[in-house]
Image (cartoon, rainbow over all chains, first blue to last red):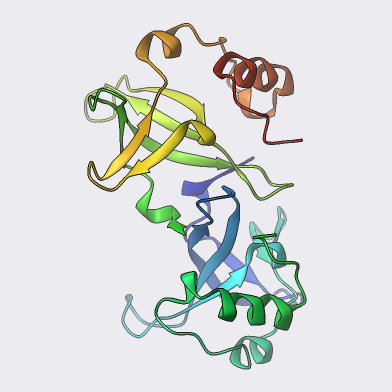
Amino acid sequence: MISSDKVNGTAVYSRAGEQIGTIDHLSIDKTTGKVAYAVMGFGGFLGFGEDHHPISWGKLSYDTGLGGYVTDITSEQLEGAPARKDDWYRDRDWEARTHDYYGVPSYWI
Amino acid sequence: MISSDKVNGTAVYSRAGEQIGTIDHLSIDKTTGKVAYAVMGFGGFLGFGEDHHPISWGKLSYDTGLGGYVTDITSEQLEGAPARKDDWYRDRDWEARTHDYYGVPSYWI
């Protein structure tokens, strides 16, 4: 069991063990009660200019040794991901393309 | 979609519209990625003596008018709920009895 207050701010590492960002918050699907996305924060300074990017929860696994999450998503993949609008979280079309892009099953079926 | 950082600290109301507590954090099942419990905080003063109690996520619904969650669980029901140990979140026996007590389907099947 994972506590939501222990997730926000947790580091996310690449398969090579390099930190690529932190988890800003989780996005939970109201209907199914499933965690749909971990919204990651990258770069920025004191919160200014930080870029956020939602990735599928299924692409993260916790590594007790590193004390953070590991993902096989690369920086290149993140940069090439489908562009999103501000209301991405209710844009089922963008969601479908994104899940397809990362090769993960959709959480809403 | 619900943002995890907008859940912690949100008020929980009874069907009568009376505030009975706040959400302290969510407990997420690692395997299914589903929110299993909302751990509620009751009473206490500046964090001292606050009692925590996990309730099934399925027993909460969001009320935009109240700006918080509503549950049909009563204070009496909470007080009479199956007693739990510190490691309740990995005590499948306690979980089964609790879901049965509140009449909600188990999240792990």
